[in-house]
Image (tube, rainbow, N blue to C red; front, top):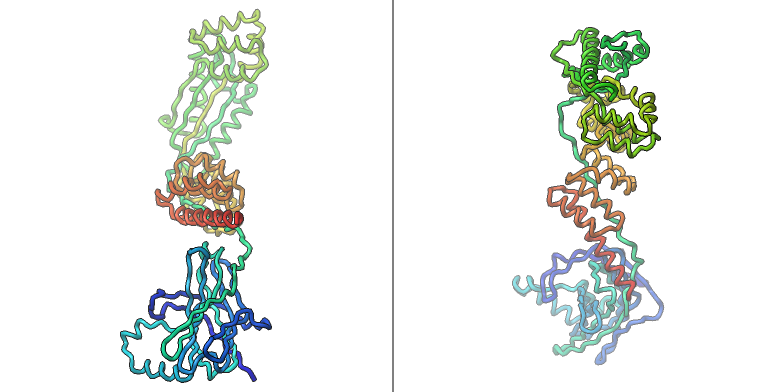
Length: 520
């Protein structure tokens, strides 16, 4: 019964140098193909005996070139005192690149014995330069048996147009040699080119700690008796307006985690009547609200800042712009000029016989008569356990760092993590570069590139944002912009950007290879 021998392809890094350099291979599956009639046949001229080459693999798979063929010899494939060397070779016609692969050696009985004796007496120096064959076959011993040669080498671009040949050197008993070359494949079998899929990394940045200063503000449209500045809690709209103020202040004053640091109250009057009287009226009404709050909550007097705007011309400008009053352009020209307030009011009364002014008195001026307040306060810091509870009821009390820590504690794959990073933090820190860049990073992972870009445009000169913008450009095949942003981020020390530059280079190289292959 015929026995089939196969040889496993191994690393050649341990083989000695002998003119062709150091071989590096990879593990490879083996073929034992029998294709019927041999398509490559090596025949020596001065001796009887044959060596048949059957079956072959010469194809690209991924980043490697796979080569395999079977060689079958009979008992007289090599002269008794000589040898036959087969050297596989990859080359390009016209003097292009070429690559010689580890060789196969067939020996006759006498030559095999001579070789054995030589290796027992030769020096270590000679052995250190000896390049062993891939495998060696004693022709008289392995009669009519099949040997499989298989190897893989790193694939290079020039191999797209390469051919696979087998050089045969027959060495006779007196050292004479004859050389034959057999073509085994005229072209490499190319695998379908799948475009390289980049694997970019987004940058997430941990926010810095902060002193948590907050403020709460609002407007009160209080009604006062004519010529008076005393707040009457039950007068007209005052019950509703005072309730809004009390609710705002109580929510802060009653919270043990909060310390009120200041309160600013500003009174405003409409441009009706003399500027001097309006200046006094607006200040006194602000002072009245200050006294009301101080008495109700027993706040120290030093906590308050009281100021006033005698006539709110800026507010009037805004209201007129939003109204349907005509002639609007003439009214705005008067409102925004540099004349004294009383002179402007007089001119407004004369426009179109005073009709627009009367309408302003009824529809716009009441909204200008108000008292605005702002409560400034600070919030204590929380432990992670506390922050996980506070985020459910009063997320505005947390710093961005505290929210970020809570998100991380839930885990990056959790819904809570995504909700906090993408929605909650940007809601309370809408203009913060880190908040916008981190939210954009998660949008990129969801392939929402345009939404991510809009957030990153608000992130300013944050290096992590440059990296994330580069990732957006890379995903959208905007390679020049991607290169610029990634280079900028890498120079600033963003490690992800260095990785992404490598991914960009791989993508550009792959795109160029694909274009060249399509042109062939």
